[in-house]
Image 1: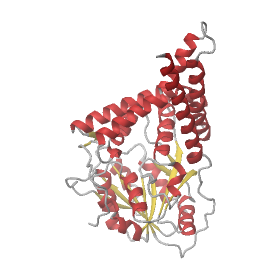
Image 2: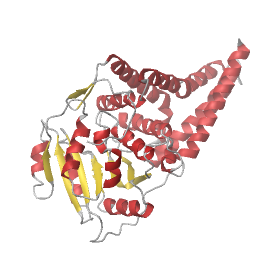
Image 3: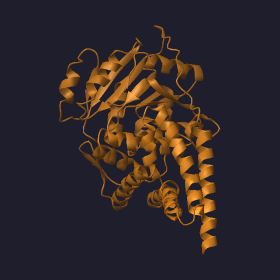
Image 4: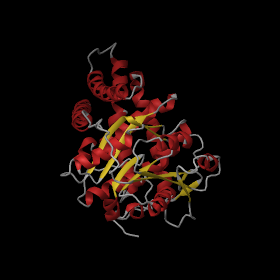
Amino acid sequence: MSLVIDALLIVQSTLVFLLAGYEYLTLMHFPTLPENSVSTMNGPLVSIILPVRNQANTVSECVTSLVALDYPQKEIIVVDGNSTDATQEILKTFDGKIKLVEEEPLPQGWVGKNWACHLGYKQAMGDLLMFTDGDSIHSHDSLAKTVNYLEFTKADLVTLAPAAILRTFWEKLLQPPIFWLIMMFVGGKWVNDDSKPRWALGNGQYMLFRREAYDKVGGHYAVRDRISEDYSLGRLIKANSLRLRMVTASDSLGVRMYSSLPEIWRGWRKNFYSVSGNHPLFRATYRLILLFTFLVLPFIVLGYGIVLAPVIPLNIYLLTGAFMAFFLWLGLIILDRSIRVSPLYALLLPFAVLVYIGIGIDSTVRGALGMGFSWKGRVYGKPITGQLEAGVP
């Protein structure tokens, strides 16, 4: 039995080492949005479409930053999803600077955000369509830089990874590991490789489309029932042999997604099960097992090795556990430093992953039993598991 355990520990250590290598290949030296922000009066018209619902705490700062964009050829379309807080009153203070659209009744089978984006699209006049979120803050030159980058790369969709605004303990503990896991899950910078259609991601916080590309894949109509609509749109772009580019833009865009543990829990709960596609129960369970095996178990092994150290100083649990923990900590420490979070939070990685596993279990149970996911006053049922295909309304 001892030899079997030793062999398993060596295999696990090897796999963690390979995971670290994959992480290096896909995440290190991630491309950034170039600084070129030259804009001319002859640039394409950009329709900025902003869906909001009950976002009184963030919408003023967001819309203010959009109005202040130094790109003259723009229109700002804000679709309010029947907000019950002060969101509508705040939006009315921007009268004359934005086009405010009241959301029509939500049709059956639609996710609220997707419906709002679709309604905004129907009002849009631009050759380029930019979708963003109500918790985003845009630098004055961000749109000019993104349009220039789209034109230079001849991309059909440019999506930005923003600076994460993290203020509370739970945000700094949980958000970086979740971002880290998502980027490894989708292939990191390989999403920019046109020869790798499997790797794709869109970030709904900032997606700039060519209108013809958006129309070709069916836009938000094609993903109307998808909770993770940005991920699905990114996949559709590459599945249709269109060009996707994702870059970091920490100086151009900032987003504070969630401000408390309950918000983080509810926000990621709606996504964990919904991205599983076909056979969601199996795939969600499989991901939970992988998370525990490769991101929690190594630290349990290390802890057991430390307990044995007074009797057996160089035991295999200590050696393999320390080896695995080093590479796991290293990757997250590098990420934390890049987003200005204390590396000390990275030392709590196993605890953060356990919380995320709890979120995943909650999501999987709710999804499998059809209990639904509550979000912004609405409840969405078990996600559709059919094949993702482009659709035209």
